[in-house]
Image (tube, rainbow, N blue to C red; front, side):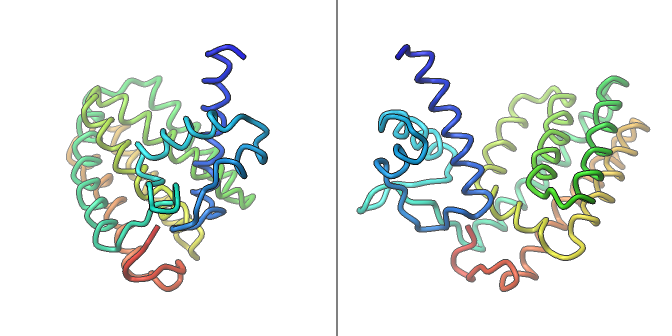
Length: 224
Protein backbone atom coordinates (compact mmCIF):
# COMPACT_ATOMS: atom_id res chain seq x y z
CA UNK A 1 0.00 0.00 0.00
CA UNK A 2 1.39 3.39 -0.95
CA UNK A 3 1.98 6.25 1.44
CA UNK A 4 -0.69 8.35 -0.26
CA UNK A 5 -3.19 5.51 0.01
CA UNK A 6 -2.43 5.17 3.71
CA UNK A 7 -2.90 8.89 4.16
CA UNK A 8 -6.24 8.86 2.39
CA UNK A 9 -7.46 5.97 4.52
CA UNK A 10 -6.37 7.65 7.75
CA UNK A 11 -8.14 10.84 6.65
CA UNK A 12 -11.35 8.90 5.99
CA UNK A 13 -11.13 7.15 9.35
CA UNK A 14 -10.39 10.48 11.04
CA UNK A 15 -13.51 12.06 9.51
CA UNK A 16 -15.67 9.07 10.46
CA UNK A 17 -14.41 9.00 14.04
CA UNK A 18 -14.92 12.75 14.34
CA UNK A 19 -18.50 12.34 13.11
CA UNK A 20 -19.14 9.49 15.55
CA UNK A 21 -17.82 11.57 18.46
CA UNK A 22 -19.95 14.50 17.34
CA UNK A 23 -23.07 12.34 17.09
CA UNK A 24 -22.41 10.85 20.53
CA UNK A 25 -21.66 7.31 19.43
CA UNK A 26 -18.47 7.51 21.47
CA UNK A 27 -18.98 9.18 24.83
CA UNK A 28 -16.61 11.16 27.07
CA UNK A 29 -14.22 8.83 28.83
CA UNK A 30 -14.94 5.94 26.47
CA UNK A 31 -11.84 4.05 25.46
CA UNK A 32 -11.03 3.83 21.76
CA UNK A 33 -9.27 0.50 21.21
CA UNK A 34 -7.05 0.39 18.13
CA UNK A 35 -7.63 -3.31 17.40
CA UNK A 36 -11.41 -2.94 17.64
CA UNK A 37 -11.45 0.15 15.44
CA UNK A 38 -9.13 -1.48 12.90
CA UNK A 39 -11.54 -4.38 12.50
CA UNK A 40 -14.57 -2.09 12.31
CA UNK A 41 -13.08 0.11 9.59
CA UNK A 42 -11.20 -2.74 7.91
CA UNK A 43 -7.86 -0.95 8.04
CA UNK A 44 -4.49 -1.52 9.66
CA UNK A 45 -3.78 -0.46 13.23
CA UNK A 46 -1.29 2.11 11.99
CA UNK A 47 -4.08 3.82 10.01
CA UNK A 48 -6.15 4.02 13.20
CA UNK A 49 -3.14 5.32 15.11
CA UNK A 50 -2.64 8.15 12.61
CA UNK A 51 -6.33 9.10 12.75
CA UNK A 52 -6.32 9.10 16.56
CA UNK A 53 -3.22 11.28 16.56
CA UNK A 54 -5.07 13.88 14.48
CA UNK A 55 -8.06 13.71 16.80
CA UNK A 56 -5.74 14.23 19.76
CA UNK A 57 -4.37 17.40 18.17
CA UNK A 58 -7.97 18.57 17.77
CA UNK A 59 -8.58 17.94 21.47
CA UNK A 60 -11.30 15.38 20.77
CA UNK A 61 -9.39 12.45 22.28
CA UNK A 62 -6.67 12.24 24.89
CA UNK A 63 -4.20 9.76 26.32
CA UNK A 64 -5.08 8.00 29.56
CA UNK A 65 -3.53 5.23 31.62
CA UNK A 66 -5.69 2.66 29.83
CA UNK A 67 -5.15 4.01 26.31
CA UNK A 68 -6.89 6.63 24.18
CA UNK A 69 -10.23 8.00 25.38
CA UNK A 70 -12.79 10.54 24.18
CA UNK A 71 -11.93 13.84 25.85
CA UNK A 72 -13.85 15.53 28.63
CA UNK A 73 -14.44 19.26 28.93
CA UNK A 74 -15.93 21.00 31.95
CA UNK A 75 -18.81 23.45 31.93
CA UNK A 76 -16.41 26.21 32.87
CA UNK A 77 -14.06 25.33 30.00
CA UNK A 78 -16.89 25.11 27.47
CA UNK A 79 -18.26 28.50 28.50
CA UNK A 80 -14.78 30.00 28.28
CA UNK A 81 -14.37 28.57 24.77
CA UNK A 82 -17.64 30.20 23.73
CA UNK A 83 -16.79 33.53 25.33
CA UNK A 84 -13.52 33.68 23.39
CA UNK A 85 -15.31 32.48 20.26
CA UNK A 86 -17.88 35.23 20.62
CA UNK A 87 -15.15 37.85 20.43
CA UNK A 88 -13.43 36.19 17.48
CA UNK A 89 -16.66 35.55 15.54
CA UNK A 90 -17.54 39.20 15.94
CA UNK A 91 -14.09 40.24 14.75
CA UNK A 92 -13.93 38.07 11.62
CA UNK A 93 -17.55 38.73 10.65
CA UNK A 94 -16.94 42.45 10.94
CA UNK A 95 -13.90 42.08 8.69
CA UNK A 96 -15.93 40.01 6.24
CA UNK A 97 -18.66 42.66 6.00
CA UNK A 98 -16.28 45.11 4.35
CA UNK A 99 -14.56 42.55 2.12
CA UNK A 100 -17.19 40.02 1.10
CA UNK A 101 -17.99 39.63 -2.60
CA UNK A 102 -21.37 39.19 -4.27
CA UNK A 103 -20.29 35.70 -5.29
CA UNK A 104 -19.70 34.70 -1.67
CA UNK A 105 -22.99 36.25 -0.60
CA UNK A 106 -24.79 34.12 -3.19
CA UNK A 107 -23.04 31.02 -1.86
CA UNK A 108 -24.11 31.91 1.68
CA UNK A 109 -27.70 32.32 0.50
CA UNK A 110 -27.58 28.90 -1.16
CA UNK A 111 -26.17 27.28 1.97
CA UNK A 112 -28.77 28.93 4.19
CA UNK A 113 -31.59 27.76 1.93
CA UNK A 114 -30.16 24.25 2.07
CA UNK A 115 -29.93 24.49 5.87
CA UNK A 116 -33.65 25.28 5.99
CA UNK A 117 -34.44 22.35 3.71
CA UNK A 118 -32.49 19.72 5.63
CA UNK A 119 -33.86 21.03 8.91
CA UNK A 120 -37.41 20.43 7.70
CA UNK A 121 -36.40 16.88 6.84
CA UNK A 122 -34.83 16.32 10.25
CA UNK A 123 -31.31 15.86 8.87
CA UNK A 124 -29.56 17.41 11.85
CA UNK A 125 -26.07 16.17 11.08
CA UNK A 126 -26.30 17.53 7.54
CA UNK A 127 -27.55 20.79 9.03
CA UNK A 128 -24.48 20.86 11.26
CA UNK A 129 -22.18 20.35 8.26
CA UNK A 130 -23.88 23.15 6.31
CA UNK A 131 -23.64 25.40 9.33
CA UNK A 132 -19.90 24.78 9.33
CA UNK A 133 -19.72 25.59 5.61
CA UNK A 134 -21.64 28.84 6.18
CA UNK A 135 -19.25 30.09 8.83
CA UNK A 136 -16.14 28.90 6.99
CA UNK A 137 -17.13 31.03 3.99
CA UNK A 138 -17.39 34.05 6.26
CA UNK A 139 -14.00 33.30 7.79
CA UNK A 140 -12.46 33.11 4.32
CA UNK A 141 -14.13 36.37 3.31
CA UNK A 142 -12.60 38.08 6.34
CA UNK A 143 -9.11 37.29 5.00
CA UNK A 144 -8.01 36.79 8.60
CA UNK A 145 -5.91 33.61 8.55
CA UNK A 146 -5.12 33.81 12.24
CA UNK A 147 -8.77 34.33 13.11
CA UNK A 148 -9.74 31.34 10.96
CA UNK A 149 -7.25 29.03 12.63
CA UNK A 150 -8.13 30.13 16.15
CA UNK A 151 -11.83 29.65 15.51
CA UNK A 152 -11.28 26.24 13.95
CA UNK A 153 -9.36 25.09 17.03
CA UNK A 154 -11.94 26.48 19.45
CA UNK A 155 -14.93 25.04 17.62
CA UNK A 156 -13.37 21.60 17.42
CA UNK A 157 -13.17 21.39 21.20
CA UNK A 158 -16.95 21.61 21.59
CA UNK A 159 -18.02 19.94 18.35
CA UNK A 160 -20.18 17.31 20.09
CA UNK A 161 -21.81 19.82 22.40
CA UNK A 162 -22.57 22.21 19.54
CA UNK A 163 -24.33 19.40 17.67
CA UNK A 164 -26.40 18.48 20.72
CA UNK A 165 -27.76 22.02 21.10
CA UNK A 166 -29.35 21.80 17.64
CA UNK A 167 -31.40 18.83 18.86
CA UNK A 168 -33.04 20.91 21.61
CA UNK A 169 -36.64 22.03 20.94
CA UNK A 170 -36.72 25.32 19.06
CA UNK A 171 -32.96 25.85 18.95
CA UNK A 172 -32.51 24.98 15.26
CA UNK A 173 -35.21 27.47 14.22
CA UNK A 174 -33.62 30.16 16.38
CA UNK A 175 -30.28 29.34 14.79
CA UNK A 176 -31.75 29.85 11.31
CA UNK A 177 -33.00 33.30 12.30
CA UNK A 178 -29.57 34.19 13.67
CA UNK A 179 -27.92 33.13 10.42
CA UNK A 180 -30.42 35.25 8.50
CA UNK A 181 -29.42 38.28 10.59
CA UNK A 182 -25.74 37.64 9.92
CA UNK A 183 -26.35 37.26 6.20
CA UNK A 184 -28.44 40.43 6.01
CA UNK A 185 -25.70 42.45 7.69
CA UNK A 186 -23.11 41.03 5.30
CA UNK A 187 -25.27 41.80 2.27
CA UNK A 188 -25.55 45.39 3.49
CA UNK A 189 -21.81 45.52 4.21
CA UNK A 190 -22.79 46.80 7.66
CA UNK A 191 -19.77 46.11 9.86
CA UNK A 192 -21.44 47.02 13.16
CA UNK A 193 -24.53 44.92 12.46
CA UNK A 194 -22.42 41.99 11.25
CA UNK A 195 -20.31 41.97 14.40
CA UNK A 196 -23.38 42.29 16.61
CA UNK A 197 -25.25 39.48 14.85
CA UNK A 198 -22.26 37.12 14.96
CA UNK A 199 -21.62 37.76 18.64
CA UNK A 200 -25.29 37.32 19.51
CA UNK A 201 -25.34 33.99 17.68
CA UNK A 202 -22.51 32.59 19.81
CA UNK A 203 -23.86 34.20 22.98
CA UNK A 204 -27.18 32.44 22.41
CA UNK A 205 -25.42 29.08 22.05
CA UNK A 206 -23.65 29.76 25.33
CA UNK A 207 -26.93 30.55 27.11
CA UNK A 208 -28.59 27.45 25.67
CA UNK A 209 -25.81 25.31 27.07
CA UNK A 210 -25.87 26.98 30.48
CA UNK A 211 -29.64 26.60 30.72
CA UNK A 212 -29.91 23.03 29.44
CA UNK A 213 -27.16 21.04 31.12
CA UNK A 214 -29.61 18.36 32.27
CA UNK A 215 -31.53 18.22 28.99
CA UNK A 216 -28.25 17.72 27.19
CA UNK A 217 -27.57 14.72 29.46
CA UNK A 218 -24.47 16.44 30.76
CA UNK A 219 -23.02 16.80 34.21
CA UNK A 220 -21.81 20.05 35.71
CA UNK A 221 -18.23 18.78 35.62
CA UNK A 222 -18.10 17.13 32.19
CA UNK A 223 -19.86 18.50 29.17
CA UNK A 224 -18.24 16.65 26.30
